[in-house]
Every structure is written in structure tokens, then in C-alpha cells.
Image (cartoon, rainbow, N blue to C red; front, side):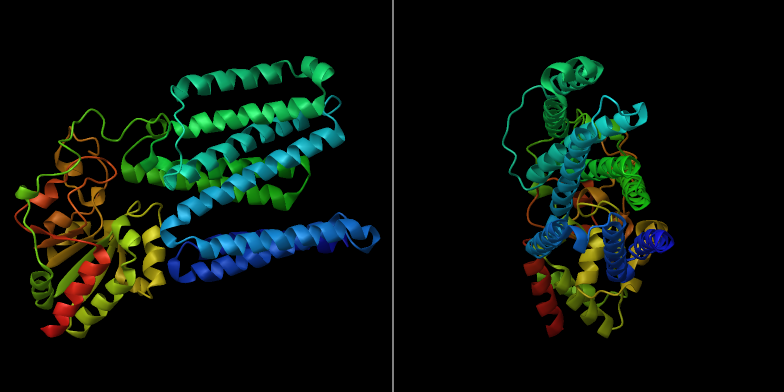
Length: 464
């Protein structure tokens, strides 16, 4: 039996690795999700058998089945409720639940086993699980609320409160043996959890709203580390491996996002604005300096273009314009036009966000290219159609050393023969700075909702 269980755990671990590998490409992402879900089912079943939860302790089996059923229902409900543009919020919410779970497990273990007689290794892992899990839980909740524009608390000097919270946590842990003699183990662990949660609130509150995806990715990595700690506590290889997978991928994703924005993680976490000390006029560029383009004119240009680049951004996701994009692409291909979608790593809320949105509209992955593959040959495109993107095509990142985004990798849309930017208005992007692309002679703007604008262009194109 032990051999079969170990083989099951090994199969689950291999399934997780294979699932992650499949999810690295949008066309295989669905299969990757299915593989990881099956692997998780095998892991849960194997753990249930390993801990002898069965007919002999029927009550525990009923509780386990009920909890799994309720969790499955909640997960499915939330997955269908949230739109693709809200995926980072859903990830943050699920991550918060993971952190809370780690805290509950650690407190339960501490009360049942006892801490005084625990080995120094187990004690360290348990206390770290509580601190990191609690901070990840509350920090993820703050990130969730900030992304949804629901966080209204004014916390003042969050850096000061964060430092005070850290000092209190250190003080509690240092005086552990003294405190537990007076207030008991359970009270001590609960108190430690509450202070760690307060720290998570202050820590996450300092991060700007535009940097929330980076914070979510980092907190996801922290939750993975806590899960690995739980695997050490319970001597569970599958929990240890799962935690390592989540932690490592979270770290890689955090680094990738910081590199794509040309900002250090320290600046993101300290809440330093990406605008630095560069003043903006009123948060909007002067509309008199740009050239508007009506839908009929854009349709005429597209009708006689041989190569078209479509550069999607978060504005496309908000407008849910990806399906109209596919219809426009199909119409252009009918007339012999080559269409390519150029993706920037942080064009959406998180890396891969745009890829998933385009896949949702049945856009073949063969038409999607990485910006590094075409940036040196952007002049081959007769038209670069920028849909709801701003900072990722801002030439100031290449030409202005005083710009706060200087050095950030961008898509060189300005090198295309003609550029049309679809925008609701003249507001700036996340960086809060103006975009000199809009004032270039080869760039024109089509104002309005991206979905409605693309539909108007498509209707005009059909008349030609």
C-alpha cells in the first residue's frame, strides 16, 4: 500500500510539472488546466487514503467530502462570475484563501502538537507559516480591493505602521516562551496572526494601484513558500512540491513584470510612483496637437495595406473588443492582407493576459508574435493599429533619459509607415505621462470605445 501511495504522489508531481509546461502556451493552456486538476484529484485521494480517512472514521470522511464539495462549488461560481479583465482580482482572492488556509493549519498544528516541546526546526517553520500566511492573506485582500477600486481606507504613514508591525512580530517571537506561560499557546498564535495580518494590510496599501499585479504575483510566491513549509511540517512530499512550484513561478513572474516595466521590485513595494518627479499638465495631452482619424479613413487605409500589426492593450480588454478584432482580421485576410498581433508582456494586467483574451476570440496563435521578434522590422507594416495601449508604445522610453519609463522595453509602433491609436480620450496610461507617439506625423487617433470603433471600421471596410 505504501508503494502505491508513493507512486500516486509521484504521478501527481509529474502531472503538476506537465500541466505547468502545457500552460506555457495559450493553445495548450486548457489541456494544462485539465492535467493539473486531475493531478490534484489524485493527490487529495492519496492523502485521504494515507491518513486512513475512510469507513472506520465515517464522520471525518463525511466532513472531507462536504468541504471539498463546498469548495468546488465556490470555485466554479467565482470562475464563471469574473470576466477576463478581472482575472488578477480572482487570482488575488484565491491567493488570500491559500494564505488563510496556511494560517489555520499552522495554528491547529501548534495547539494539537504543542510548541514548547517542538523541535527548533518545527517551531521555526510553524511560526513562519503563520506570519507569512497571515500577511499574504490580508495583503491579497487589499490587492483584491484596490484592483476593484473598493479600498477606501486612509492609513496615513503606511511605512511607519509596517515597521511597527514588524517590530511587534519580532518582539512576540523573541518573548515566545515567556508569553505562552501567561496567555497560552492558542492566544499567542492568534495574536501573532492578527499582527501579521495588520502588517500585510500596511505593506500592500503602500503599493500603487497600477502595481497591484506585481504585488499579487509576489504574494502568490509567498503563499507557495508557506505551502512548502506546511509540507515540511506534515512530511507531505506533494504539498512540499506544490509549494515549490507555486513559489518559484511566482518569483519568476514577479521578476518578468518588473523587467517589462523597467522598475525594481523595491520601488514597486515602496510605493514610489512610476512618474517620478516629472510633472504632467493635467493628466491629459493637448488634443490640438494630435490628428484625429475617422473610421471611414482608417478602413480605406486598411483596405490598401499589405501588412497590418495589431497591438492590443488593456483598453481592448475593458471594451471586450477581441472578437471584433478577429472579425476585422478575417476581413483583411480575405483581401490578402497579412495580420500580426504584437504582444507586450505587461499589455494587460499580467503577462499572458492578452494572449488568453485573443485565444478566447479564436484568434490562431500563429498570428501572435512577441515584440522582440518584430521590433527591428516594424517598418514592414503599412499600418500599426494600437488598441487601448499607451505606455507599451511610448517612444519616450527610448528617446528621453529624463522620462520615468526610460529603458522600459516597448513595441516600436512609431516605426510603422502609419499608426492609428484607438483611445477613449487623451488620458495618460498607468505611468501618468504623456505619449509623444500621438503627436508624430505618421500617427492619428480614432476616439471612442474600442469595440464600437472597430465595428465602425469593419462596417466601412465591407463597403469598399
